[in-house]
Amino acid sequence: MTPGMRRLEIDEIRTRIFAVLCAVRDLCDANGIRYSLTGGTLLGAVRHGGFIPWDDDIDIMMPRPDYDRFIALVKESGAPFDLFCAEVQGDAYGYPFAKACDPDTTVIEAGMDEKNARFGVYVDIFPVDGIADSYRAAKRRCMLFTFLHGLKITSVWSRYHRSKLRKWYYEPLRYLCYLLSRMIGRRKIDAMLTKFVRKKPYADAAYAGRLVGDFGSKEIAPRALFDSLSIISFEGEPFSAVTDAHTFLTNLYGDYMTPPPKEKQISHHEFEAYVRM
Image 1: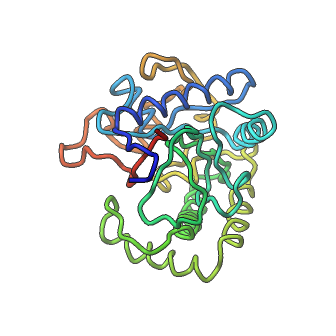
Image 2 (image 1 turned 90 degrees about the vertical axis):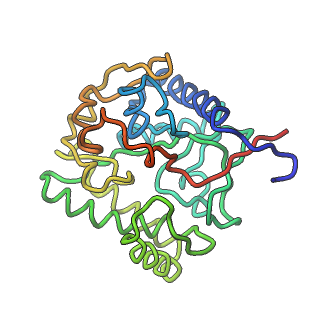
């Protein structure tokens, strides 16, 4: 155990990240910044009215212009949470998306280099980028980005480690990304990613998506899907979400209203979380 820290249980993690989510929502609402619940958080809202029972994270997404405004606003004016992103911590931060974090906690992730930025329990904030003007072109660009994303993630590993969640046939690609990231270097990888995701402006794209998401080409959708927002309840509080949540969730999960079998009802994260005593 980390000295002066107490390990958090899943219910405590949920309480803290829900408070961060509410703070992010309030900041967005006060400044006209568009956002939506996404991934398992949106699925949880639709299927369970809140957290998926075995999950311990919260994800939201913002169109890239709103994502940029959000980061600039927090940097200039501050917020009741810590913001971690490449625009703030530089190449010490290992993800191509932002995290809004509880300032009183610390997360220790499997395989992460100790020299990297250390953040608390978090809400992941994914940018939604313009991808292309046709689905076919968008799918090609999404495949290339998946590889660049792998380079970014593995660039902050202290060592290669096998995933507990990915199937075995992903491991050769993960290992290749790990080796190449050492050869290329974080700064060059960051520059490549920045150029790639901003090549097609969000407002000009027919197709958009969370390029930095976990679902590859399943993330691609007409931009109009991300532009139409409604209110949905999550843990008894109102939040913004894409109006056509059915299409979005079907793209990602298929039959999303049927829970997975018991053996797959596990958290998707490999970390331990601590709070200052």
